Length: 250
Image 1 (cartoon, rainbow, N blue to C red):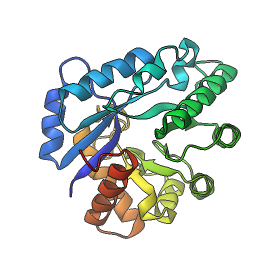
Image 2: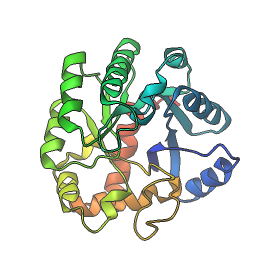
Image 3: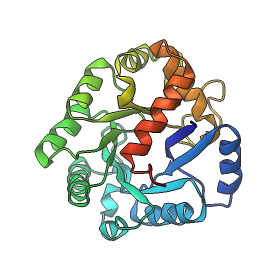
Image 4: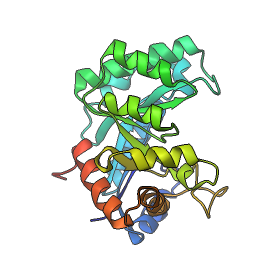
């Protein structure tokens, strides 16, 4: 087995090669690099075509919802695209008007349903609104909440909708007891791990640029919260992520 970083943002400045070499040396063999807009998604697809063990998503982040999703659907048929997203709601920053965020999120839910693709969700300060839109539009068969920051109540709402939840380096931060309680309560087969690099580097690298090579630290923190060995989380995440994204035959 090996680790899968189920959500990262590889750089376009030529640094991806070195990051991937470091990741492989640390046992991270598969990565999903995530689009946050139509142009960004095209760029992530280009990286996925260039490097083995890398796949891409295509989606429009709520911060960029005002730019619309024109041209997004055409990207979803690319063989390296394994999910729609990241998309959702961010009522913390409100970089796009909330109604626009809601509309673009609903349209991307529908794309995931029409194309039978997983949906990768970003939600911040908008849990109930996110659940309401999912219920109204139709919950995709495969759904993951990336960078999960909720507690046990939000976990249960997610699981009731058949979702996976993905833990980031935040789980290593000192004042996140509710998040660790959620990790402890989450069935092993329903969780994933990620870096969200270059953001949210885990302790002891907090405050520095994150990188995919650090995803084993996230997995170890999840294992500690659950009272398991890191290898148990590694094995489960590899199996779950590979099935979720359809990588088993790759």
